[in-house]
Amino acid sequence: MEKEQFKIEIVPLRDKLAGCARRLLDDPEEVEDVVQEVFLKLWYIREELSNYNSVEALAMQTTKHLCLNRLKSFQFRQKEQLTESVSISDEVTPYSQLEQKDSVNQVMRIIDRLPGLQQIILRMKHVDGYEVEEIATLTGSTPEAVRMNLSRARRRVKELFFKM
Amino acid sequence: MQTEKQKHIEELLERFFDGETSNTEEQELYSFFNSPEVPEALESYRSVFGYFETGIKEEFHEKIVENERSFPWKSVKKWLWVGISVAASILLFLVYTFRTEQPDPFNPYEGSYIVRNGVRITNMDEILPELEYTVREVEDRQEQAEQIAGYLSRKEKQLREQEINATNPYRKILEDNPNKYFRQEMKTILYSEYK
Image (cartoon, rainbow over all chains, first blue to last red; front, side, top):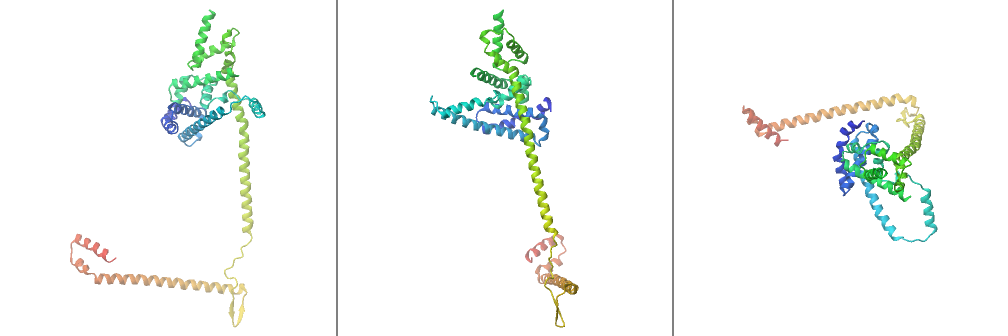
């Protein structure tokens, strides 16, 4: 499946997917992010799309799951903030030492520390060399919306580098 | 000259982190940070741009290789399940056929006997034809009885209809009146009352 076909067959699903996401998420910016991510995920499996009975159903399911993931991680983030504020202590306990050792052993790739959408956008831009405008046509969104996510991803990478 | 270049690069940097640079401008940034003439103020960006130029590619490549490495395991697991289920169904099939291969000794005439001249005959081979003949005769009789019962019920129905017609007060009117629509109307009345 090439770009033109993708644009004709897949991108028109955008309204439906946005509707689905809007039912689960309140923030219109998050809705936009989820829709972008769904389209880019579909773009990377474009060769296999013909194996599915209904690409629409696949896209809807993906949208639903991404929304639920976001809701879950939001709850998780809140809980994390709460526990963080509770245990502020400089004491060196065996537990905290063990924790630190674990986190050192577990060297994560930088890319794995970014949210899914930012990962995909970085992949499109830096691995496959797409321009922002091309990404925007594939997701049916505006170049500004893509640029914003690209900007966030690059700034996040910079932050991670300067922290190390 | 040097400062002008630095200004240009700083502007590009700004736009890079706003996501506004084109691919060619990004190439320019990469080659600038690869060159030895990076000013001290921008030195810290060198590793970041090394990552943007090649690091991301490597990480994605690693990821894909990892996925491929874990993939065969998945398919092996799948085939293992297929194998197990095939074996189980063959086993079930064999057990089933073994059980059914043993002749099922069900005999509807088991324990039958015929008393002839005060002698009780239990030899199956001898009495079986006679038994079967008897059973067939019984079945024939039953069939005849059913036919008669059917005939009787038909006859009864016929008689009842006749009776209805004879006692029906509208019937005379119906017969006398040649008007088609009137007759139709009457018929509906007749059948609604006597059904």
